[in-house]
Amino acid sequence: MSYQNFAGYAGDLLAVDAYALLEGDASAVLIDVRTKAEWAYVGTPDIHALGKTPLFLEWQTYPSMAVDGDFAARLEALFQSGGVERGASLVFLCRSGARSRHAAIAMTSAGWGPCFNVSDGFEGPLDDSRRRGGAGGWKAGGLPWAQT
Image (cartoon, rainbow, N blue to C red; front, side, top):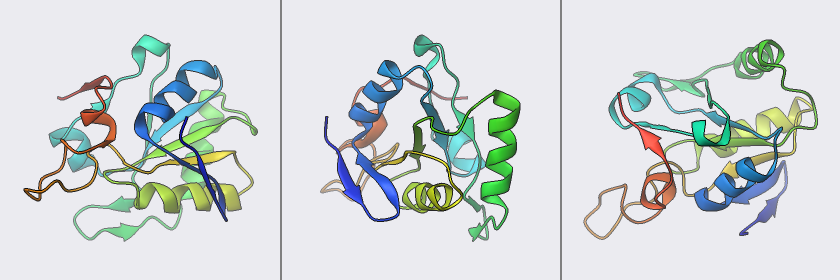
């Protein structure tokens, strides 16, 4: 398992290792912090085979991309309604690992965690053709996903 620790949160995981964590830890939760537009048009992780459903909460709101100042409180409310307890591993996912890193830091600061960032994200980095989705990330890693 690739795992790198950074100040402010538990560390970075590659998407395939994040899936393994979700599979091996019954209390681990996946939180997708991309925008509603990304969920609708790019797709979403599908972890139903693990007996889990991801949580969806935008870190930034499209189209302004303003950070949700109430993100931590809103996510805590989702945790409460879903029975997520403190101490559960929280795995944050965005397109390519930047927004999810900020979300992991914010939730660690709010007293939750361990909080992990999926460093290669849902779509991964740009490839040589300047396209996402083929050079890493959830989709390129062959992990289950769905599109509406």
